[in-house]
Image 1 (cartoon, rainbow, N blue to C red):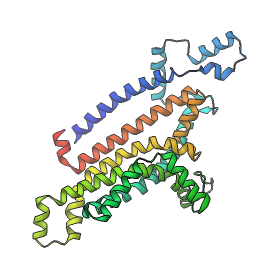
Image 2 (cartoon, helix red, strand yellow; image 1 turned 120 degrees about the vertical axis):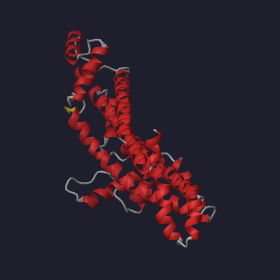
Image 3 (tube, rainbow, N blue to C red; image 1 turned 90 degrees about the vertical axis):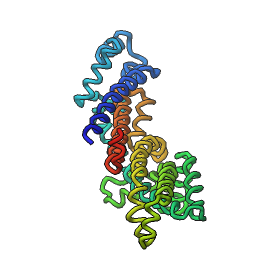
Image 4 (cartoon, helix red, strand yellow; image 1 turned 180 degrees about the horizontal axis):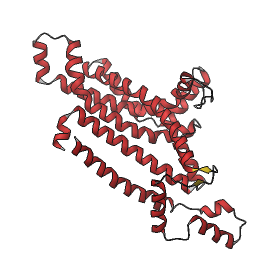
Length: 315
């Protein structure tokens, strides 16, 4: 297991180095100039030159890259021009908001999708299997902004079951905060529901067809005992691994949701920083998002390896 972990960590370190380079160079290809955004269009050429020298923009691009990477690793992420505050404080605060929203989404998604998938697998070919399979596939292809608008109109405007704003008051308790986050979390739940339910269904059907299930039936075990002792234990490891992978995709889907519900998360910060050409904020936010995806992928690999020894033994 240690060898398995070290291999994954070495791969992540290499991928992070490549990602940091891509983030830095691609961000600097965006149109616009940070010095112009700071000084405005009325400054003199000498003022532009002085500001570019202060920001280090007059240095070769490879020197700026290694300087930025070293500062990032030390926790010095620069200063946000648009928000007028340290980038690290801004990005980490927005990341905390996104984690809360993603946590609510995963708390709804994983149990509901796994239960639905197992239920469909136990009733293969029956009407409940068809409803879950067709419904999950349909929800998967609906874009987040479409389902988000529909949910907002129906449940926030017409029925008034949920608040239209995703941001709870600063003095709100835990359940009030969760209630504000339920509606914006549902669009990303819909997109991922079908994948996890389908994996759970396939795993359940595969296990039910295994010889040891017939042996357990001949021994007199009830269907409930077979499901709890054998089906779930052997069918769910790949599903749990996929659920952790979907968590990284949820982070990407939250960009649309946060913009739609004007939620101050990491996704909305990315959009705001790109439109205002806030390079330090954009670089830090994109790299942090990449780190999150890689960490979730590592957790998925480790979880699958812990639940299924064949993965770590076979590499």
